[in-house]
Length: 254
Image 1: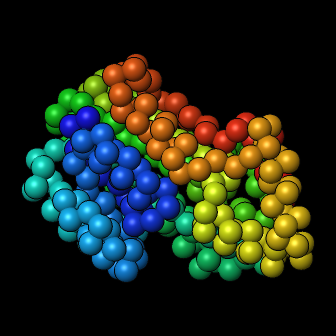
Image 2: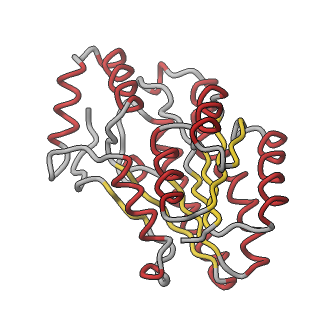
Image 3: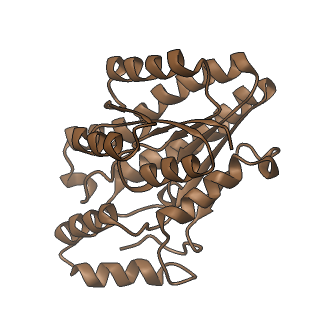
């Protein structure tokens, strides 16, 4: 796989797994992350990657990063608009405006900046694939997580809209909707929801597990498997789709 692949939020977790898995298939990798320490570690571990610190909500920082990639590659084949944040947990009447805006900003506005750049390059070259990371929260209501769910529903709309806009130019746009993903981020989500609801973390954990038909969470590698499939010739006619990788979520009620 000789793709040129860009990943946002690529310093750790799902994003880093996406980058590493594409690289293992022979792809060139460029990634950004807001965490300077994470980016430094990526540079040490993968000196062949383009890796830059950039806040996806900062137009100047993203412009510098994306401009560097464009200069180095001249185009891009796969863009994984993956950067996101879990945001605050709590009842909407108790939620601060700044917390709400920050969650929407990373998950939705940052994705806009990435997709705007990708659309320009891919339309010009007549090919490409954009993969957005949404969530099963973009398919259900999600009590106590209103800004996160709102942003992820927005990404579903963005996926469908961009697939329609860019399809005539030969560009595909899809989204991957993870369920609960094993790792540090989900542990932070559980801690936040426990604080907001007053329920023990282990009770919340079991509620999430029971809300999935397969009675298990997914891994970052499960999501990378889907991304690699979408980038393969086998998925050449798949666009505008929300690909849930979640073991079949039945409920998100914590």
